Length: 551
Image (cartoon, rainbow, N blue to C red; front, side, top):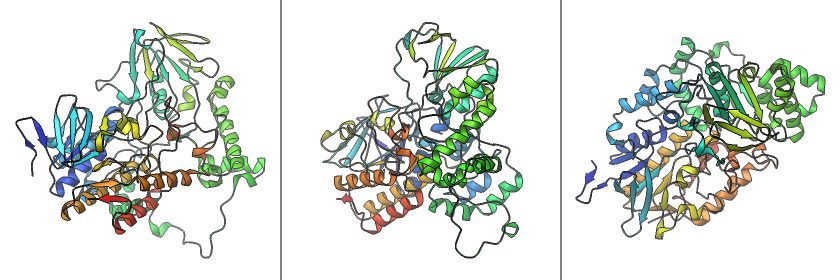
């Protein structure tokens, strides 16, 4: 079927998809295969989503390339050649563009177009989507593939509009690139900042890093992919994909080492895992010397036992001081006051080493906050810093921001922002009560950012497509999460998070919405694991779409 256009300039299709990142592209392909007409609306000029917008220097994936790829098409996995263990942004964008070309996706995507509103007509059981170009698209099904980390967050700093230099955000980096050979300031040392700072430092005349809260960052140890490793993955991709689907994180934990070279599995019960808190100081130092950052994987009690966590933080602090030459700078870069594991653990390349460069200055905002942006730079309580370019590496309004920036109205005109005034409530991260036939991909309440997101995306897309197919085959018009099911799922999401460092009393992270002033504090993703989540979604379908109202 093809989209139809009427005299009122309303495009009518079977499904409208918002966003042409990895979720939107797979939705378009999958729903097309199922015989639906689809229109995708994308704000950018091309596909790629996160990897279209995040073009900042040093942007790189923190998931191994051989596993950060689609698994729905075996031939696609065989034909694409990754070059690095963890691919950089340009290579991932080329992969997305290759997928778009291979499956002829662009003909059904409206680029350079932003959705501003979407409303549900209960009488006709249809959604009407309105764009900033004045387009109107009608469809029974509306699917938000807007991404969990796509709504850029620029803090409200007095005087920002007066700055005569250039203002940038890492999550909306110019396609044409930026000449950074001048005085550059960057605010933020989260994931984007940690990746960008070492690369910018190599180009800038002077780099000022404005840091409020230091984070934990582990060496990426990135390197070119060996041909034999790539070949081994390709020969075993069927097994790798199956293991990904049922693992807790979306990673296969498969090794390219030939099975014949592996040690025979030990017989009998496994010995208990060692606990870091049970080691004395000398033993902890020896463990660090032996395992390095592998210690954080070996001693899993670090993420549940506060005493073990504190011991791990002490070892981490010693590492920072061993790398950073200036003791005061090392102190400023050392995380204190919150546990390792409460925030996203970042991978870096020479992050701490960068602060030994003579052209890099760390501005510790804990000693003096930013008071205003002036015409020529940044004013803090301790001094003024002259800048030509100011970069915000301040992250995103995670998981809910992109949805709440659209005027989304469900049954009887109820606004999503009103329903979520005290925090987002979803059923499985897939639907919101009161919003029939509206689906969210990797929404709040799903594993999303705590898993290999492409594997999480594929699970959601396939579940949504199968559900739409079920409705169509059975002459049903709508599916809607019940309020009771959404409330129960919200309690479960919160209960599963208890006892982890994610919700430790001293933890303030974007997982909790703490980076956005006024945002209700609640744990947003599902920490129970992707495999467990997948099984629950399948169980719900087997039970006749338990928790959903079908009409």
